[in-house]
Each structure stands twice: as C-alpha cells, then as structure tokens.
Length: 472
Image (cartoon, rainbow, N blue to C red; front, side, top):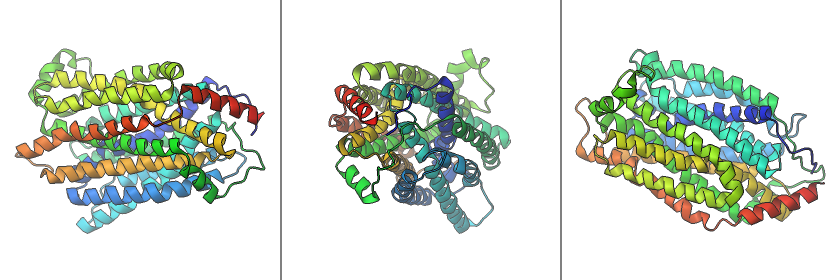
C-alpha cells in the first residue's frame, strides 16, 4: 500500500466531521423521534409501528449494508473508493429524509405502505452514504493517534447534531406548525435536508484517501467474508455495536414519552425558573424540560469526548470504552427510582450519564477502524468497507430492534397515543422501565463481551508498527 504523509490538517478533520453532523441530523431524528412520529403524529397503531421499524430496519441491516460494503470496496474512481459515494448520495438522502417524515393524506392502509416505502429508501440511502463515510475514516490515515484525533472532531460534530435534535427539535416542531406537529416536522425536516446536503458536499471536497491498496491486491467477496468469520475482534464489535444501538434507540426514543406522561410539569417550571430568562423560548413546560434535560447532558458529554483521546492513548481503547459504558449504565438504572417530582435529580443524573458515555463515544468507531487494520495485519488483505458494513449491520439492527422494542413495550403496557385522560399506572411503569432498566441490559452485556476483545494497547502499537513497515 502507498504510504503518504499520514498527518491531517485541522481543515480536513473539520471537513470530515461535517459528514457525520449531516448524517446525524437524520440518524438522531430516527433515534429520538421515529417511534413518536409514527404513533403520535403520523397515526400508526403501536403494533404497526413495531412491524415497520423492525422488519424494514432488519432487512436494511442485513441486505443493504453487506451489499453496499462489497460495492464500496470494489469502487475505483479518480476520487477514491469511498468519497464518491458521499457526493452521489448527498441530495437523494436529503430528499428522502424529508419524505420519510411527511404525512400525506392517505387512508390507514396507504399510510402503512407509504411508511414502509419511505423508511426503506431512507435506510438504503443512509447505508449508501454513511457506510462509505465511516469506511473513509480507515483510509484517510493509518496513524492511530491521528484517527483518535479525527474521531474526537467527528463526535463533537455528532454531539452538536444530537444537541440540536434532542434540545430544539420538539420545540421547533411545535413552533413551525403553530401546534400542528405534522406540519411542523415537515418544515423542520426541509431545512435539515438542505443543510445536511451542503455539509456532505463539503466533506467530499475537503477529504483525501491516503491508505490505498496495492494494485495487485485482489480478493473475492467470499475471501472477504471468510476473513471476517475468523476475525474474533470483528465479531465482538458487531455484537457490541448492536447492543449499544438497541440501548440508544430505547432510551433516546423514550424520553419524549417520559416527559409528556410522567415528569411533573409544575416541578419543571419551579426548578428551571431561576435560569428560564437565559434560555430560548419554549412552547410549554414539556419542551422546556426535555430541552434542558437533553441539552445539559449533551454539553457535558462534549467534555467526555474531549477527554477521550488522551485516555485512549494512555490506557488503550478497550479499557476506557469498557469503563465508560459500565459507569454510564449505573446512571441509566437510577432513573427507575426517581419520583416524578425529582426533576433536579433527573437533570443531574442525565449529566453524569452523558459525561461518562461521552468518553466512550468516539472510541467505538476508532476500534472498528482498528479491526480493519487487524484483518489486514492477519490476512495481508484489506477490506475496509465490508468491515464497516458489518458494523453498520449492528447499528441498523440495533436501531431497528431498539425502536421496535420501544413501541412493542408501549403496546404491552397499553400506551394510548394522544390520550387526554392520562396513562394508567401500568403504562407509566412501562415508560419508566423504558428509560432505565430495559436499556441498561444491552449496555451491561456489551461490557461483558469487551473482556474478550483482544486488541489491547500493546497490540494496537504492534499492528501499527508492522503495517507501516509493510506499506513502505
């Protein structure tokens, strides 16, 4: 492989990070509002929302991503393997994101069909865009320190998009639609589609692929899959990624239900009155509480991301990622025990959860890039995109399972969308479980699996040194 200078400019790191900011305007909306959109805005029954999110999502995970990975690894253009896909999909992804959150005036059966079609195309285009984008991180540089640095930039951008969606989205939907949530979400998604498309084009223009396979390197899809089947770190990271995104979808999608149906609105006002004049205008106590709850956690999470590189460089990615997940899970569990008036305690707990989770946020994707290096180190063949495709299977599969579990559990606990009489005690207990006990379980299983992940700090150094010698 050719070995150009592996150092990255600040401009390139920022340019690369904008691609994830754009993608996460879509992804964070799916995590936070897909279930709520289908049940409380679009008007699907919880059981139908479960079927759409689960089966479309799993089909996308296990069909779109492997196919896209194989295609991307075999793409050869003057722009590289992965960058052109960011260019080609920028506009279609924006348009499809808007269509997926639109509410056409169909009968109920037509609504279900429209949801299936638009969600399918959204996940297809997301795979065609974000999988090559993620694989690009493995070929921009082979320097693991630079990867850690680039990943920190990337996930500051991720947290920024997460901040926007989780803090302002609900409030903007109410404002843009003047109380009409269907109209409001269409207006907001139109703006996000335009902004996201521009950011993806900037990513294409400012990045460069430096880790280039030798011309004589050829491998078939069957050889790539055979390599993967023997790659234990890859298998572990696939399962861990799936578990993490099950948790993110469950707890992230549950917060709006938690604030609408459980948290005491009067206490939100009382707790936030001292700082209310310094905050943007929110439509009601629910949007205010949800915005501050999410926003405070995300801002403190940025501190965790900032600390991530130094901790990972010193102690190794695996160890820091394990510790980050475990401690952050303890604060998730705590939410089950809070009475509805404990608003201040809820805010503080969310801040602590997001600080520790933020430390591990960038590490997940740098570990996946390391798995691609590990595969090349072991097999003398590099198949970056197929490895990232497998991780995207975990991401999409986790999102689909988590979102489906969310709506399924709401159905089991007899949630009534749009109820003016309040929810039953059984339903409230289910909502509390959805922000605490249920999402804690996948995180804890992921921590246990990471004990068997063999790429520790010592092996990271050895892999980088050996590959640098081969690439000379």
